[in-house]
Length: 439
Image 1 (cartoon, rainbow, N blue to C red):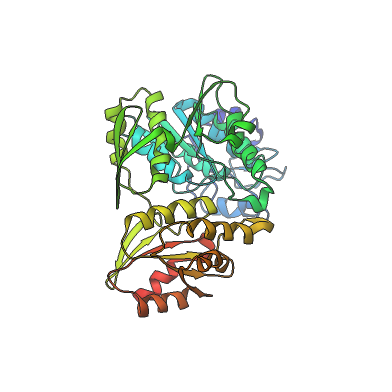
Image 2: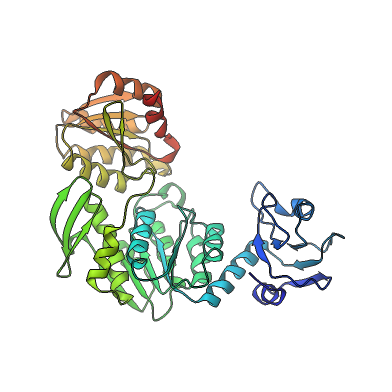
């Protein structure tokens, strides 16, 4: 809640109207759920303008609002003018972040952001009152919603940062000022937007621009990250080479890192790699190895990330929340190493730019060097490119244009001896395959 003085101080707003209302306000950007104790903050985008709905906010009970114009509605009691409502939202979030003053962890990367965020949360929440970004709400608006929804007793705040172009992570991190900044990796996701792997690394390393000078930068050990990192403070780089993997099982990993043994309730070396950033944050936060281990054991994948489901006698592992070349290679490798009679269903990967065909073929080339006793089902025009190197190495590959065609094939040709793995970009809507099989 914010009083009038807080809002003016946070945003530098000009007061256009003040009828003496004495209310502590919450911030609302949605006229449909607004209440009398909310001040309406109208956001703007390429296809919408929240200021066109100020009258609706007032009709629905609010008595206060922000605006970028000089027009004042008669039925308002308190009106603040700012030059940009999104900047005002960010400034209010920063004001609240500084008021509560938790230890802040910022997370970005080409792949594994949300998984890493959930692992860091599992570790820190084992000892501290911890708040995190909901789901993958990782843009500027998600940042504001995350910060403004934390409780006043929050000790640790975890913010996931996504990006669609250069400057976006820099914009968020300079409002957040994290104590710890994590870059999971710099890979080819979004290369279609940014044009090169170097630009991706530059964009990811922007997270360090807002990192406190006495903070810590934590990242997968990649030369491209080090090349573009501009941070003079403490840096921790990790990789799977630092780990001794002791046991790999379905839904279980055991490994030694820094002379301590940890366990995860998920499979895959890439998940072990993701957990190393969580371990390092825990150690920096003063947690013991035993506390960190206890936290990691509470981690479980979220929806559409290695989600195990039985349908009509068939066992599916749905990892179709999203995909890029790095995550597809890593997850398929982990799957075929752990499950008998594996069947891999792959779809198109999006946002790979003019070299998208080459990236899909590179995935096929990588997979063609693995276990040959795998059947591949490829759905989509670009996914067909994955199949060419596989066929050349003698793998069994079938191709389909639609999810429905793939689901019919699965029902008619596979049985309970198979385990079926699904991986594709969200745009492929692979959940439709499971829904069709259920029907």
